[in-house]
Image (cartoon, rainbow, N blue to C red; front, side, top):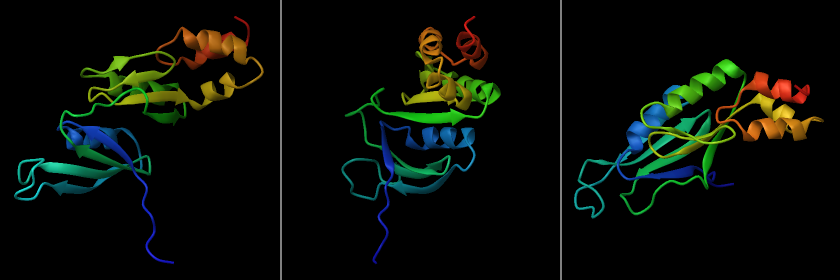
Length: 159
């Protein structure tokens, strides 16, 4: 059958691939840096020995972070979606990802200190968003930054 095809999402950083990957891996279980590639002598892109790429797993999913220089930047067009188990996990991730220069957005979206966008969504919120009271829930959700499960439950109940 031959070699297995490996698919990884690639994240482009100017020069912060390793600190970003290490930070992300500390946040979620089943995460870790797997491999670090360095620029070889004579390479036109980077200083010999400096980090070119980092392969890592985040929640079990494979990623590649590269130090590609300032040519491209991350945008909200791509985000990492995390379905959390409860409000405590939502709060922990939200606080960690917005700390040190991250910015809150709307409806569970944020941008971390490295410029990567995330969606932090509690499992219960997702159920409510597509349940029978979805209209009321979405109205409440649109007014939120970090998702508040209790507030969505109240909206679903008509309060």
